[in-house]
Each structure stands twice: as structure tokens, then as C-alpha cells.
Image (cartoon, rainbow, N blue to C red; front, top):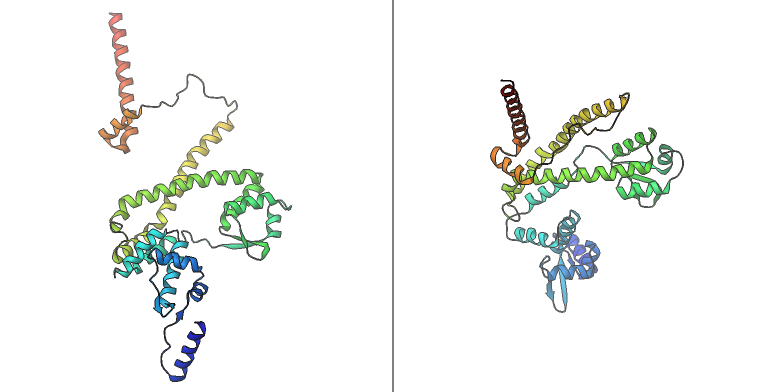
Length: 322
């Protein structure tokens, strides 16, 4: 069939006519698309790929099949399931368009930082971290994604975040062992992923729900959602930066005061301790004053109770004197 395509192209070139559409056997389609013959047949069975044209005993595929296979591969790389891809492609085939949806996919899948990846040689890496090869540390860094191997280059690595590697280098120079740095990064990553998940849940509920009422969203809704992603993209990092600065200022001051104390001692039995309130009480207060006012309400109620009891005690004392 490849010979047929070349022959058609040559005839068209000689006659000045536009080239005929390309035609492929299933083996040729697999070669050009990167999919296997088995995968192509599975996509046909699931309705993801149109059936080929039947000519005698042969099945003939065209450029539309090749383009569809490349779209499927791209969406799979972005994390979509075959079921959701089928919904998208069915909407496109029904004339609802896919341009807006693919634009939204590209916007979400794009970089969330201006930082650019860099490369580092094994020699530079060893010199940065003690001057001696440490295979275990390299393995940990690759597992965490701090370093990425480069094909056919055993002496060089890709660094997705040079800033993250620079932080690790500074901590190591300050005396922190590499194993402790890796452990801290794992812990930090879990906490940051939780923050990212909560931010996405929050914005989906309050911002993006209106764009996602249809599955898949219309072209216009998807385009509007992509614009909103661009607007909200920096907010998560700005919020985390501000809150981290506030928390560091608060806790670093307390930490320093504790360690500069001439005789630091543990909390005594007579010092204030945290009090855990029943969940039913918390829910009742939330319904009464709203979640954002729970702490202030409980504080005010406690202070009022202390004041009342103090006044009662003073009154009782006065009555005894009389």
C-alpha cells in the first residue's frame, strides 16, 4: 500500500493534479501512528476509531484515521481515560467542536511556573554534593523527579527544577545530610499536593462548575474556562507564598525565643493546654455563626463565662463579708 501511495503521488506530480488522499493498510497505519495493530483494532471495537473502507479483501485506512490515532495518543499522554476520550471524540463528530476543549487541556497541561529545565553533568553533580559519587542519593533524586536520566547520556541529567536542586545544594552545604533532604522533600511534597488538591476542589466548586455542566463542555465554555485558568494560575502560588511567609515569621520567632532562653523547660502542668471540643459542638457553632467565625465565637463565649464566674465569686465573697 505504501507503494500505492508513492505511485499516486508521482502520477499527481506529473499531471499537475493535487495529490490523492493517502491510503494505508493496517500495518502501515500502525507504523505511521506508533500504535500497534492490536491497539488499532481495539480502538475500532470501542468506537474510538472509524471503520476502514472495505475494498475487495482489503481494509483501507486514510489520513483521518491517522489524525484520530494521534489525537487519542495525545489525550492519553495528558491523563485522559479511553472512556472520556470517547466522549470528547463523539462530541466532535457530532459537530460540537473540540478546539475549545483541546485549548483547555493545553492550558491546564502547560507549565505552572516560569522556571526552565536545565542540565547538569555527573561531574558537576558530584562536586556540588561532597565531591564523591553517591549512587543511593542519585537513585533517590531520580525517584523524586529532581533529576531525570537522559537517553544515551549516562554522564548527564535533566534538572526539571534548577531552583529545587539549588535549595538541596544549599541545605547540604549547611550540613544537612542528603538522606534528610530527601525525606523532607517527600514530606513536603505530600503536604503541597494536598494544598493543590484543595485549591482545585475550591475553584472547581466556586468557579469552574458553571463551565463544566456539559460533558464534554461546549467549545465556548471550554474556551472561557481556559481563559479563567490563565487568570487563576498564579493565585495558588501567591497564596501559599503569603501564608508561608506569615507562618515562618510567627514560628521562627517562637523557635528562636525558645532556643535563646537561658533555661528552656518543657510545658508545665499549670500552663495552658489545647482543648478539643466535641465535633457536635463545633457543627452547632458553625450553623449559628458560620465556619469563619467559629474561633472568635468560642473565644468570646469562654471569656464571657470566665468574667461571669469571676463576678459570681466576687459577689459571694462580698456576701460572706457582710
